Length: 125
Image (cartoon, rainbow, N blue to C red):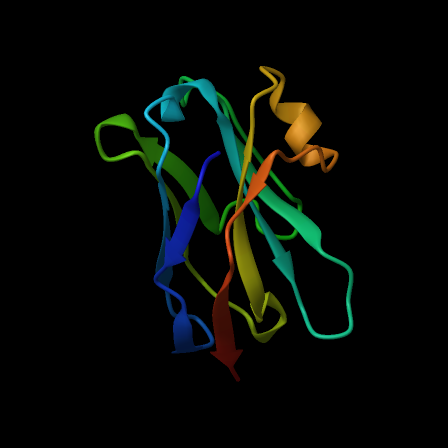
């Protein structure tokens, strides 16, 4: 069992930045593909970003590419999502996800073994 705990959400003005963190409880953190999803009120959950085991591969949703950066720190069992140039449409609950399958695209398609509880991000105009 892996526990994922997100932090770093909050209220920010449009154009601002936030950094989300997701701390994993597993000692095998480096064997999980990690990612972020988000869900806005009244909408389906959508993929945001994914990072491979090694951190050498990343992939983003078109809506956030160029503004968001995903990274991981093995020593801290933590994955980050740096969000810049935030827009009101980025407002959502952001959830961390972990998948044991080696192919990051599996997580992109929604195959997730573990979810975090989510953290609220609100961007005001």
